[in-house]
Image (cartoon, rainbow, N blue to C red; front, side, top):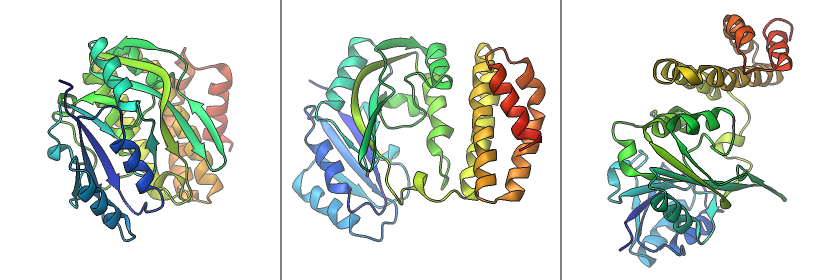
Length: 296
């Protein structure tokens, strides 16, 4: 018999998208599911939509507690679907098949980024099976492994001892690398099965603000983790981190956040010696980093 898979859906003010999201999960070709909807204090009609689905399908459960819902799951496997996104009918079946056939701990797949009238297939270049170090390397190189919770099927045991930062955005990037590091084998299928909706008003597409800068703290924690556990990957992790520092210098400048821009430039300067020594960074990337640190 197919193993029980827990699908976690965090819900917050997504009434326009929620029906399509839940419908895409309920109608999966893989049927042995428990679908846990986590209301995070919605003020629109999202809760009422969840209630209707709970009445319609006994696999659906709604909880109003403000947590990610891991404690509520009883499945042997877990996947996450954002409540404004949706999945292909065979999404879970394909991930489960890939995971079990390859004796893996995590299965991921390509996704389709939908921005208004345009759709782009991303992170769908190849099928592969990778060990822990290769998976983390692919994450840092942005090569088919995306630093988000969605788009993957996990063995639940990988989350033992791991929890999400309370009340913080960018919780995915603070968590995913820890889960990947606990996975001995990760498998990836190139067929895109997840539709990532880039919409106005979502957390990641609101006007840039100071709270978004927490990602820098999370990435510094990642660097410390890699330096301790996977020193062979340190140069890849540094490039991944410096790319984000560069990006946030520009974002702070564009959004007239002068003090924050200054602080990030100071931090970037601290890394200049490591940048110049890093053999994984191109000359152009190093020059751009120095420019942003001192002249921008």
